[in-house]
Length: 161
Image (tube, rainbow, N blue to C red; front, side, top):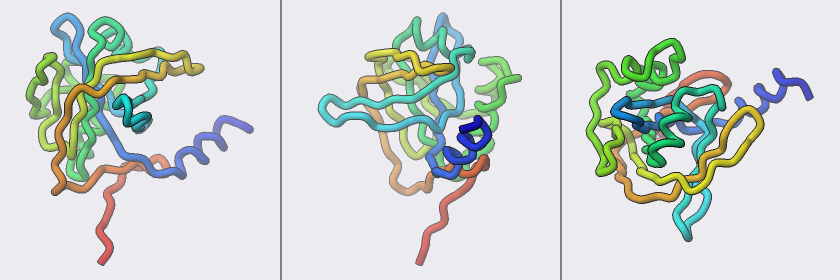
């Protein structure tokens, strides 16, 4: 199978959109990811994948803590800002309202939910690292709708009546 067909096939599967945040030596890092999934209930585990060339790998491997921010349908600007590889780590947070977790990781305000994790394992996954995280804490706002990635586009879900 060629790479383009593989991307189209995988892109036909809708996923939620997250921004994963971390910190290293007082520099905050964050990136948009749709590769987040739950793994286990006992113990509570999640995973996400990150390109090996990404700057955030340094922070993740040094600090060992991260936050999964599950974006709401009104946060497409935040999604695009954290997906912009031309922005420095500091610039990605410009104009984004946040608060700090107990481990000093940025939580993006007004997201649907957030989960704070400690890295349990890092697995080689081709051109990506697979980060397995043990869930430490989190919060949920049930009144919001999710932001979704499908066929190469960011979309909103609409309620059916």
